[in-house]
Length: 156
Image (cartoon, rainbow, N blue to C red):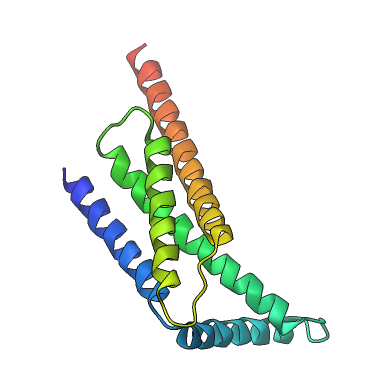
């Protein structure tokens, strides 16, 4: 029960972060991601000085990676939360929850000044969530298989 509350709180916090970013006007959101892109690019240029980079393409990549990463984190949190209920198919429920949150996210952006609402973002968000959920599911199954194998060997 304690895990359920902890994962529930963490999941809500991640959702507040995601939806809070979506409520930022396009000018502020663009400035934040632009500064992040410039910072990352300056580190790359220090490591590889003569690397030809188009800033606009790199900035677009960073924005896409942020979508993927935010929802990958949300996928982990929702998966862990759903698993506390011992549901038979947690991946299905978690994916539906994350995809629903992505739709709400784009709906928020549709009503935010200078922001665009895109179906491709919902798809990217859902893929990010699914990748992390799949990884969690696989790790959890491996850990269960390993502990069950240990218990079988200990009982012999």
